[in-house]
Image (cartoon, rainbow, N blue to C red; front, side, top):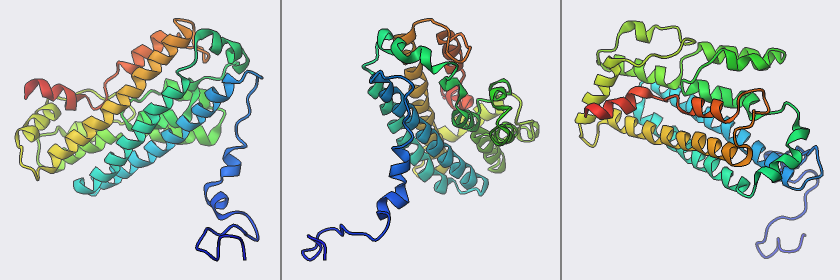
Length: 276
């Protein structure tokens, strides 16, 4: 018997793979860091980028859970995955602190060796953006040669965003939502609606504790506010390490990011506050 087991300690002998490693795939995860330079700072940049990728996937999963609940008219059930997604965004935002040591000189020591690699090319982040209603056919073009990835992104472009599902829910709950908005081409850019804004004004004026739509509105506001923090930190990180240099992926860098960060998410949820 292994030492410690007799006294209630953990099991320390296994015939095959350690169960934790089998479940978490820790050995696989720790084999995925392959820096292309000898600069020690690159490991931080690489691993934190990978951590962010995992968070993108996790938040995407939660947004899809929210959609499923809203499509089933289960607003109360949607609140739990919204809460989880908000907490995951806290973790995603905290990841930026791990790169706070990086000066422009630090970044330049390995940036040139990254070639054309850029966070701009994250397919998972594109999925996350599309679920939040930030759709662009242009931004999925880099993945054309990755057939499965491109098909999944194309499907996401044509599918309803989370906000589309929220708007459809308001229509089912009796608010005056134009049918053409519910039946719109989801791949097209979303145009804010006065009717959707008016619905949120009415919802917020009903301050009963059991007003589930008001709770939904506040939970979604928290969610997108934290997402906005991530976008702002991205802009700040680029400004701090690159200034106004061109981006690695061929974009204009800082100016392009600032323009993307200015695009509103869940627009009527914010504009309605002016009318309350």
